[in-house]
Length: 46
Image 1 (cartoon, rainbow, N blue to C red):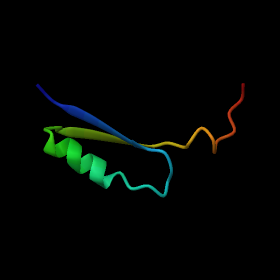
Image 2: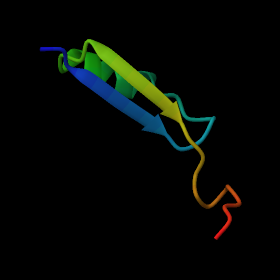
Image 3: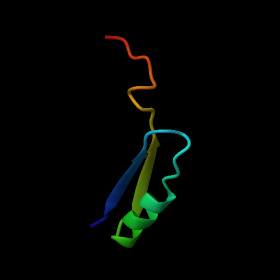
């Protein structure tokens, strides 16, 4: 069975490397990283 991890950071200034390393140490073979924007920073339509 393949273990998949997901790491997300809210701003471009944040570095997901520590989160990715923790997921790999926990056995994740594949790690997906998402560089999202905080909902406070983005203008989203209603």
